[in-house]
Length: 129
Image (cartoon, rainbow, N blue to C red; front, top):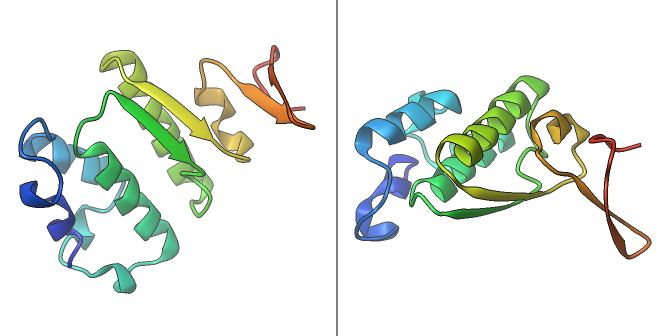
């Protein structure tokens, strides 16, 4: 199954997915528009991760739960993904929860919580110490 096959309606949901135009914009934002004819095994780890992010956003969910979405990405791509998540939250009224060790995402967060020694606390500084 190619990258393009990941975005066929019968593989996701029947309606409510991103429009063809919005999907094209998303693929371009993530820098994967030229990889749609490739198979996952032909992509780097970072490219695969960006395809997975696009695949998760394609059904246009109201809530996005992202577990280490930027672990294999370089800093430039982290900024793109962070800005995309922030834009989705603010402009499209999405709830986005990111679980990560990647402090490069701090600047894009509205709220940051930390689990330390099994205790969840709100990080009042906005950045991890």
